[in-house]
Amino acid sequence: MTLQDEDRAPLDTAAMQRVGGALGSHPAGLYEDARGRRWYVKTVESPDHARNEWLAAQLYALAGAPTLHYRRCRAPDQVATAWQTLQHSRLSRFSEAERRQARHWLGVHAWLANWDAVGFEGDNQGVATDGTVLTLDVGGALRYRAQGDPKGEAFGTRVGEWDRLRRDPDNPHARRLFADMDAAERQAAGQVVTALPAAMIQACVLRHGGAPALAQQLLARRADLAHRLPG
Image 1 (spheres, rainbow, N blue to C red):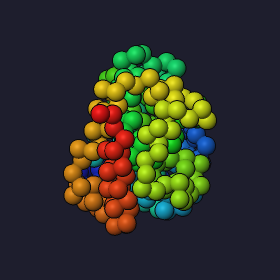
Image 2 (cartoon, helix red, strand yellow):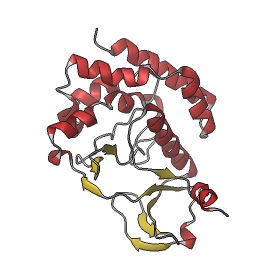
Image 3 (cartoon, helix red, strand yellow):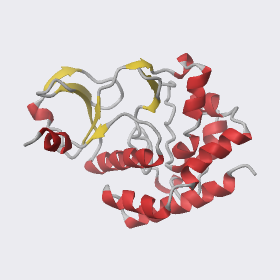
Image 4 (cartoon, rainbow, N blue to C red):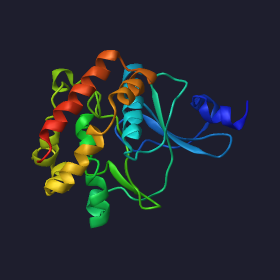
């Protein structure tokens, strides 16, 4: 196997050394592979949860929204991200420039129904060593909540998250980040999503294990988001 093939192969934690424990609410660990690279691997509730998070990560990437680097795992209920050193991972420590970066991705979070975009403790946004603001975990996007419960009808064709992420008192860190966005910021954040071609959205969903119905739902959500933009 070439190094390029190895980089595409699913990770097998059974062949790796565990070097650290869980950082969040899911069973997880930090693993080191034979080349010395480190991966944070969490075990989620089911293979469907893992597929949901993988697809969410690919849709974030399609929209250009920075996240940690996701990698497939051999175990179907595992999700892996490349270990990355961060300057900080608390919204309370963000500079104003970092907050502006984070706000630019409001439209993507809303479109993908990531209720946990900022985190229960303001800990789902981080700043990489190069200054890029990242969403650290996208497990709360699409069909499942961050703790694993299905969203059911709460994930539909309307993007109520566009308002709730800015206003909901029960999501205080998201409100603290997004509430003061002016019309120009909101327009720019929404256009990140509305500018995505339908064919690219459909291809991404189908290529990464999503159902055709989900692709259509995301197109409907994109259209609904377009109607919510200022002006």
